[in-house]
Length: 416
Image 1 (cartoon, one colour):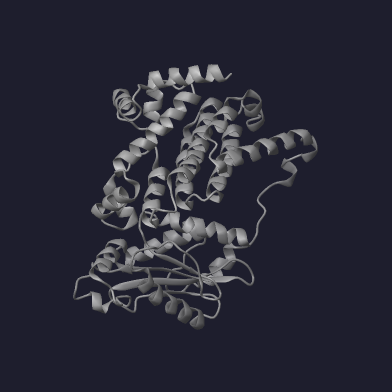
Image 2: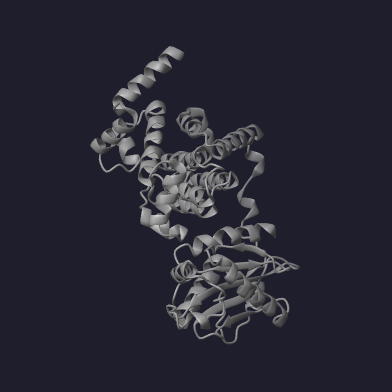
């Protein structure tokens, strides 16, 4: 059941993105199959958590769970997760703290180790503080939403029984509902061909091939064969959004950002009331995924430090949404001053200028390859107003958006 394991891995980080609660996913050999936690002090945490996993596995044989409250300042939740008859993984949620650590408390923490002052500061900011009942609530939500099993009561119920109960394969579909004989094999071949193209464009960052695909009448008829039914269009849109998310992740984009974008556009589908709105939602989502891949390949560099490349990746993933220096620094667990200096030193540009360059670059593509109005482009790229968009664009390129579009049209006419 490899699919289940992969599914769990990409849902782990998404669920705890806001809480920043560490998740440790150990395989049968007690190697880390996945962790969503990364700070300057991760090695100290790992050296503490791995013995917990080993002792838990020995104490509970194959399955079980344990709310670890041995230390008055630190809490862990340990349990096994079965993905098949012979595959059981040990998962640890934590550590979380019961109080904010002080210099008096730090020596009492079981992962204190040989931490420098800066590591202590980063770690204390990265780990959440909560009481036992709140932690139980987080565990309950985790088991419900990520593992999708009914949570234990923490007193009597065995999680192994719960997992077994909810892991049985069930078939909820009526096989008679679909008459395969009525489906034309040539139609299926064309659908598969366009879906493959759709995924290739997303994976390779071919933004404007996607734009052309959605403007092509034949392609839209194949991708949305039942435009008269809003519900059928929504189902088809959900399938295409899923294909785009998978293609983007497989091309190297971060799983959390891929899933976050998927959730954002899936939520828009709920209120869509026509095929035109639904198609536009899928188009916008696919183009954002493709732009991510294109920009990631273009702007990251082997000559930059991992921190700078990660910063660039975060900026690209959030476009066209705005993100401040403080938000970036918080996500990367370093100070804003250090991040700004490092970025400037390695790229020769400030973070603000880099973000403006990215948006202007995207505006150039939209001006050259689409018929979107100047107001639509400025709104799409989150400029505060069209006049501010015109000002920044001219500052970066030397011409106004109107002049740039006219020049692009002239070049296109000459080349044709």
